[in-house]
Length: 131
Image 1 (cartoon, helix red, strand yellow):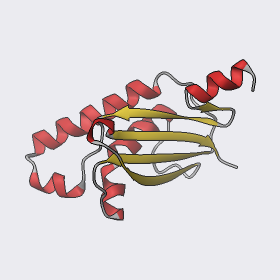
Image 2: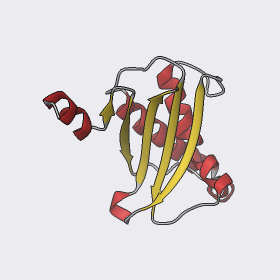
Image 3: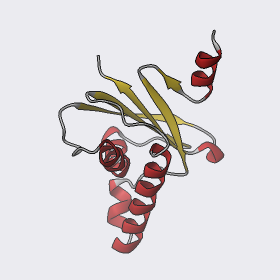
């Protein structure tokens, strides 16, 4: 393995894409939206979007089409529609970073979940070239 390959592997990079971690950002579930005051929900969504944008700003924008996989890492799991709803703010931030609307057909969106310890909570965002 070359030095460049080792460097890319350590930082979650590959020739076809990258993976990054946004610690502490779990998104806002649809149930939380209903239970919280609107201003708390708005602040939580804005913080998540800012955090994702900050992490993604360290990477070059890939050429479209791409596959974006958002993995919600938490101590518990949500049902499938709750997980998709919770990742809406992450999806919006990724689309804004890519410079397109999140409904752009050149982007394939995937949502996954993974159980982790509390100190490891956050979102993994993987962006890969679509084949």
